Structures are given as structure tokens and as C-alpha cells.
Length: 72
Image (cartoon, rainbow, N blue to C red; front, top):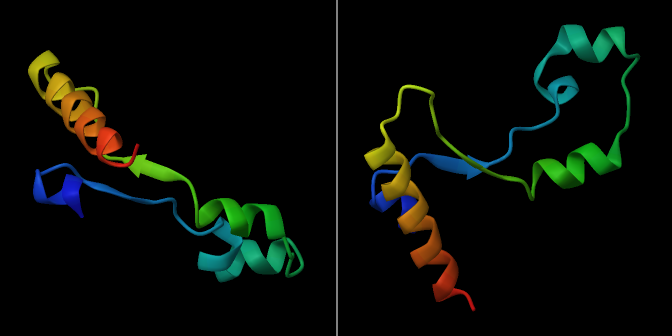
């Protein structure tokens, strides 16, 4: 929430593909992958793009550092 408030798109990782695509799920014969499911709830993703300027990248880095220090 703190990063989104600062204009930085972020989320916890997406669900495993087999959970969001019925085609993939059927091709994999309805898998159960507890590690993938666990990681999908824990991996933190930040929206970045190759077109970002150095200034934008530094802003993201500074905000991440600031928020991380709040949790020390």
C-alpha cells in the first residue's frame, strides 16, 4: 500500500498459470504444485519497464529502501 501510494505499481506474484488457465490445467492433468502455490503468495513484484529513465528507477529504489527500513 505504501508503494502504491507513492505511484509504484506492485503486487504479490501472480497465481501459478495452471490455476488461471483452464487449458494449461487440462494439459497438465490437473496438477497439484504446493511449492508454486506457496511462492505465488510470497513473491513481491514491482512494475518496471525498460523505458523508465534513470530518475524513475532511482525514485523506485529510494522508495523501496525507505519502506524496507520501516520494517527493520
